Length: 186
Image (cartoon, rainbow, N blue to C red; front, side, top):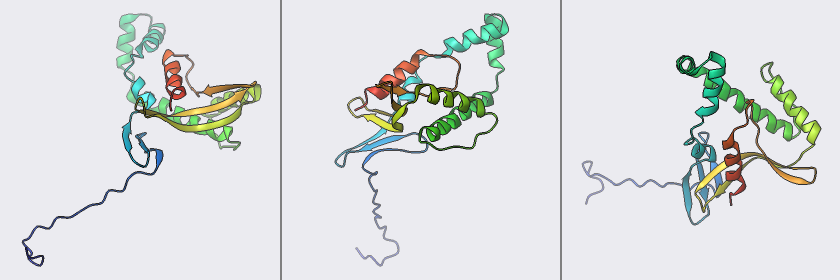
């Protein structure tokens, strides 16, 4: 083989760097765990796993109350634009960022839309005076092959609590499953 021959196809080697040691997450919430000898990736997130649950019950009940019945509720739900769900998700993400900043002792800038959520969180902080042990902490279970980011772990009245910030008015069963997933991480 003549390496100077332009018609010769040369094999190009690419070196792929391993991910950093420990647990990492991309902006898209794809988790990877590198032990130094083995890489576990992708690890599904706790919330991704819980998406398989049918959560329509509370939404349908709310729609029935808003519209006056099953048929009207279904018709009305079909007209809701996707941007409303996106807007609620954006508010939830932003409130989580603000709660993290407040838990770390910062004084974030707050918009008029965010202000009621921040007031409620400040009220929680004043009432329960949590001593935070972890805030926005990534956890993983290599045994069960999942990962996630918990909102906070805090000491309240001498007891350790796993906390989850929610912006909705309802209390949903999958929240318990979500917290259990974080609790049972390695």
